[in-house]
Length: 503
Ligand SMILES: Cc1cc2nc3c(=O)[nH]c(=O)nc-3n(C[C@H](O)[C@H](O)[C@H](O)COP(=O)(O)OP(=O)(O)OC[C@H]3O[C@@H](n4cnc5c(N)ncnc54)[C@H](O)[C@@H]3O)c2cc1C
Ligand SMILES: *[C@@H]1O[C@H](CO)[C@@H](O)[C@H](O)[C@H]1NC(C)=O
Ligand SMILES: *[C@@H]1O[C@H](CO)[C@@H](O)[C@H](O)[C@H]1NC(C)=O
Ligand SMILES: *[C@@H]1O[C@H](CO)[C@@H](O)[C@H](O)[C@H]1NC(C)=O
Ligand SMILES: *[C@@H]1O[C@H](CO)[C@@H](O)[C@H](O)[C@H]1NC(C)=O
Ligand SMILES: *[C@@H]1O[C@H](CO)[C@@H](O)[C@H](O)[C@H]1NC(C)=O
Ligand SMILES: *[C@@H]1O[C@H](CO)[C@@H](O)[C@H](O)[C@H]1NC(C)=O
View 1: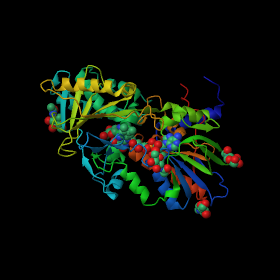
View 2 (view 1 turned 30 degrees about the vertical axis):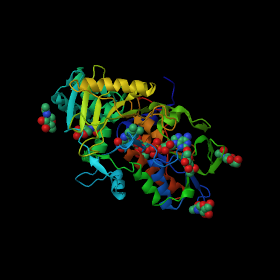
View 3 (view 1 turned 120 degrees about the vertical axis):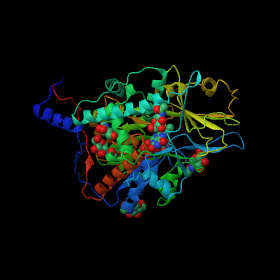
View 4 (view 1 turned 45 degrees about the vertical axis):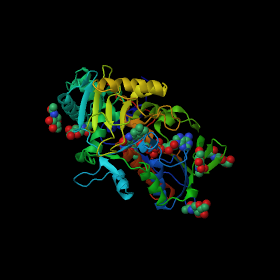
């Protein structure tokens, strides 16, 4: 190990210890010159960017949103799907309000937006409306399904115990083994996938035990400030993006948004920043707030000059950008399960496992639409294949799920390629076992006081969720506004080296 002066070692140790317990809140004050006319560029017009803009608007601060796509919404992306005359608006990206409102009244801000803009959602029963399948057809293994629910609970309790005792993080795979969930049967693994990968979009090996459990608690468990365990699915035919676009209409003027504007380079210093667009335009600003996805920051799609300091690079590369892929199929008529959900256990874990019926009285009855979700490396694999080959694989699974039915070819087929999309590079962030809370602090931290970071991945409690993007946009823009107005400026700072305490 590298030599460290003892004072520094002590400081790092204190920082480390605090990182294992209560959330760190490190900050420092800066002098802000010429505050009144400060201008802010918000890079990215997804949920975090629009909520940041609303915050600046309320605080009377000038801003411009710069967005590469032709509309606001980011990962809220709807599209038209279906054969001619049987078309429906569906969601390539986020689809559910996860946790709506607890009995005690803690409300998910996404649920508030849904209500404010009259967006049509339906409660989706993930636990109690399930039909199970394997390669031989329909097989009832709901007892295993119920057991896996309890096993995730055991994992969460064991994780909470590790937090209380300040023990190091482990992978969810290790955690599962330690609570005795060791079965490797196809049925068990499909049920485990449903509990874990279907949420984290990554395997238990690649997901932190503590963060995975804590994230579920923060969102769903009212004892942890969560919003209750209902999941409301958007079936609004204007698209889920309506929550962002209608909210933007309440305060945003067209002159405050640049659409079709792809950022190529950001040059920053302690004095300000210049943002160069792909078409050559250069925008000058006193402050920049980037809301680009973690995947975009990881992939060098946007050039930062000077390059990020090493603590920032380590934080960016240490979290993972997972991929969650919904594959949509439309058939002339429904021939499948009447429950809301279906689970398929292949001999290969994660091979076309989670099925959902939209042709259901609660969703889009008569639509003939069914979709299946894959995640992680499996998503990356299919993104490299032509649609026709993926369709063949999926249809092979459908035919083994329904051996007694002559299954027709689909009349429409579609899946998005999030991992290879240069504006996203995946679907949402996931917290791997080697990622420390100090890394999270550094991911959020400001560089040179003028470059600030928001977006789903910067949320410690709600990363991966719409409400994580919402809260990050709100919190970071509020902190920036305080700095710009000279009212108790608090800049999120970093830890230079993320270290382990000496043995
Ligand atoms: C498939 C999928 C399913 C999901 N399901 C759910 C769900 O059911 N419930 C839930 O709560 N969350 C879900 N999420 C997560 C949720 O969508 C995100 O957490 C949230 O939308 C992220 O918002 P954001 O503002 O942080 O980032 P983004 O929405 O990614 O906004 C960043 C913006 O930056 C723009 N941009 C990128 N690069 C450039 C550039 N070079 N120049 C200019 N602009 C650029 C992008 O176009 C984008 O609009 C899902 C996500 C995906 C992809
Ligand atoms: C905002 O920008 C306008 C036009 O550039 C300028 O006239 C105004 O003073 C600015 N307001 C603030 C609060 O900076
Ligand atoms: C953005 O580009 C699309 C085509 O890609 C175009 O239809 C739209 O009008 C453009 N919007 C703006 C604001 O330039
Ligand atoms: C599974 O759990 C649900 C809800 O707790 C219960 O209604 C159902 O009977 C259980 N099924 C089996 C097979 O254990
Ligand atoms: C999650 O919640 C359960 C109670 O439902 C609790 O026992 C556990 O400690 C919590 N785990 C974490 C990591 O917060
Ligand atoms: C931005 O560009 C202006 C004009 O060219 C220049 O004076 C300024 O130093 C640049 N700022 C940064 C941070 O590069
Ligand atoms: C950023 O991370 C730190 C450390 O975990 C946390 O205290 C802070 O609240 C985070 N910021 C956001 C917006 O979640």
